[in-house]
Image 1 (spheres, rainbow, N blue to C red):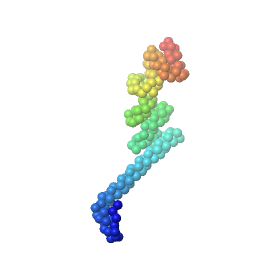
Image 2 (cartoon, helix red, strand yellow):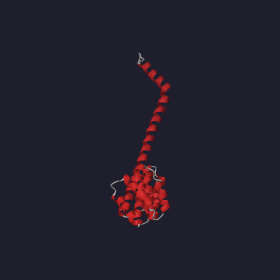
Image 3 (tube, helix red, strand yellow):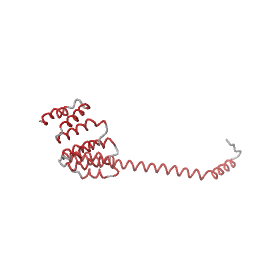
Image 4 (tube, one colour):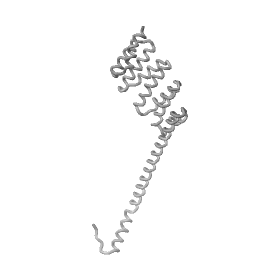
Length: 205
C-alpha cells in the first residue's frame, strides 16, 4: 500500500483518486440504489397485486357461501391481476351454477377455465366437469369430445367412468361396459362404479 510522508500528500492522493474514479463510483452508486428501489417497488407492487387478488377471492368465497351472489366472483374471474385465483373462482362459480340448476352457465364457466388456465391439471379438472355438465345437458357428442381431450393418466378412471355414463345414456351398453370395466381397473374399490356396471345388464334388458 502506498505510504504518504505528510498529510498534504494524503490529501493530494485522495483528490487525485476522486478525480480519476469519482464519476464512475457515483454512477455505480446511483445505479445500485436505483436498482434496489426499482426491485423493491416491483416486489411491493407484486405483493399488493397478490394481496388484492386474495382479498377478492375471499370476498367471492364469502359471497357464494353467504349470499349466493355471483357478481363478486365474476369480478375475480375477469381480473387480470388475479389470474391464478380467477380459474379457481371459475370452478367454484361453475359448481354454484350447477347446484342452482343453471347448467348452461356452469358450462360457460368451465369452458373459460379449460381455455385460460395455465396449470394443466386445472384444465383437466375443468374438462372432466364440463363433460359431466354436457352429459346432463344431453349434448352427448360434445361431452365425448370434451372427455377425450383429457389425456393425463391421473384422470384415467374418471375419464373412463364419464365415457361409460355417456355410452349408457346413448344406449350403447357394450361400450359402456368396456368403459366402466376400464375405470374399475384403475379404481377397484369404487362401489358406485361397480353398481353402474352391474346395472348395465338391467338397462340393456
